[in-house]
Image (cartoon, rainbow, N blue to C red; front, side):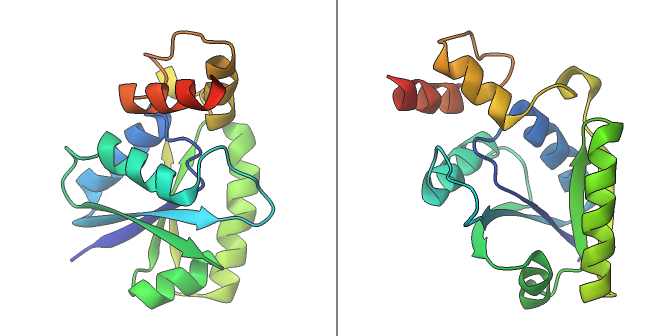
Length: 158
């Protein structure tokens, strides 16, 4: 079986993330969406809330599971015996950071491959931060996040 990990904070998941998830799921037999615990970031949603939102948003995509992990991605990948990491790119500006991370991960684990997928052009501007800002001002979220995420964001900002 071909397996891959798509790791991120997903605070919250957006249609840009889902675009990458759908495309990665079509390339691999199993895709593990790994929610990273990041001690340097205070999330709007807890890891368990993010997990529930991702599961609800991706329930129709075959071969996808969602987990929460703490620590280095390379250590998580080794523990799962998965050596392919999916990374989404929105623009050229993302590539520099992602390339640095991929090279660092490969230095730590030479068997770990990074696969870069360009997000669809209609989501190239979209980020979780933008979604949160729009929700803060009660903007229409329907073209940015699934309905369950829009409702959860609305509850956070009421």
